[in-house]
Image (cartoon, rainbow, N blue to C red; front, side, top):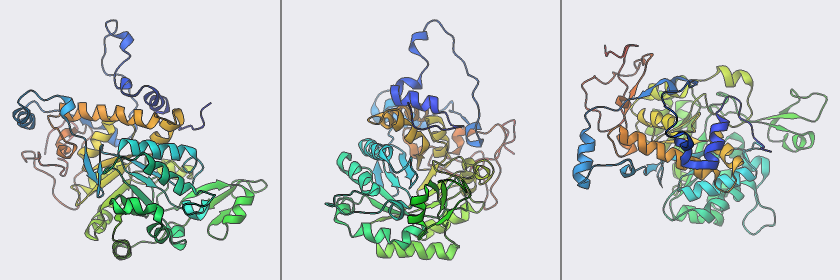
Length: 444
């Protein structure tokens, strides 16, 4: 019996990919020759999924590749490797943050860490792991949840690729988490190989403006009450308590000072920052890049593996597509999370300026289906779709994708902070601002 459920998320399809891998990219081969195929009735979840991926007729970059290879290019010639927040990764993917929730800090997270390492993609460890679960240095009898994940990753990681990113929240800062890890010999292999980053978390897509929330029993609530707000709103007469973390307070100057502190105090670690899908996301992202952030993560309102009030899940925060539209051409490495589980959605985010996309719920579901290889098979299926799609667009690196590769049937809004790209502009060099179109597809 499976442990996890994901209401509103394509759990059945993700589990199939975790079992069957790349075979799930195609229709059932048993029906070949007996069935005629066409577009199926798909449920469109949000604005990002409404965009059509539109290959051109004339493909100068394919011609360049043909000349370089001295043969016709194939989808297998697409290079999916890239640099993500200072790390080298084999795919434009990373493992999104699982924090101190029950699903995200147990055995499933350890299995996910090991598979992410074998894939050669970065892994983010979420907030409040040490304040909730404690910390033990190497050699102690009791191992912490955080160290278990790091050890699993290091044991399986190939040389030179991937990396480990550790978030810090307000409660983590009180526990001096980054100081603890930076001085721990267990993290020396990551520091010496340039594969450690610290991520300042300012919010998340599941509950913008709120801190982390988990459900704990009465005994655990008593232990955590010194560091967290604990409330009986869930079950006043029973055992369940709501543990709430504080979101922290940020202005643009506070953010700049925080990032400056991180760069000065932890010079060997990369500097990341994660934002919730706020209405000023473009200003926040540019502030972070100007302060030297190696990566900015935007968590769309579709994201979230943790516990959150229903009203936040359904009604609060900008969709990921709108976040990416508002940011426009990024000033640095932009990472996108929120509802990622297949190659089409990933390509759309990459075309709108993201360097890589994060797998959160999909990763946990895949590992829940197969703890040994589920995430690897899911990633393999996404990688195949990416190669097929990027090749179909006449391009051979993910960095070459741009908003010209998308068509929006409902039109795309212009930016308030700058002009859009003219229809005749040369966009082959990379991401830029989307062209404004009306529903009929005409450029004004």
